[in-house]
Image (cartoon, rainbow, N blue to C red; front, side, top):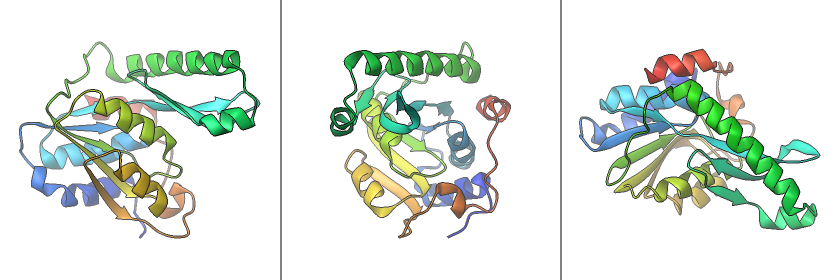
Length: 208
């Protein structure tokens, strides 16, 4: 399946989530930046409030692109313990990266949300959306963090992702709505005709 852009993917997901339309307890969350575009279309179609939820990759000291775990905007930290041991990373190195990403998350939250308080998720039906998933490490951390907020129901909405990753994430959510699980799986951007980087300004505008 090929999506025209993130807006198209969001509209297609919204059609699958139509059973939630106009329900007063539904909240839609997007992971910035691209996930906010997808989530905004879902929220618009369902007539539901939209908010931002951040999950950042924790990178190895010598290679920031190599994920050793993830951290969320609620402070949830998920480490790949086997990789940490394999790379012989010290607690000091890990703590330094966690603190760096924690500060970056706080900075971005201030940009995206301003002075608005986060939405209360307790006893709500929470839909968490992104523009696609590859390894799923950041989304796994996000789902576990969101579970701590005690939602009545936690739904993962994803346009595309590899089947084994989707299966793993399904164990952390109450329902998964996914449009395509191709195998073999390439980079998320390969499944979009247009996959330009979403700007902070676009995210801010969508969250207003």
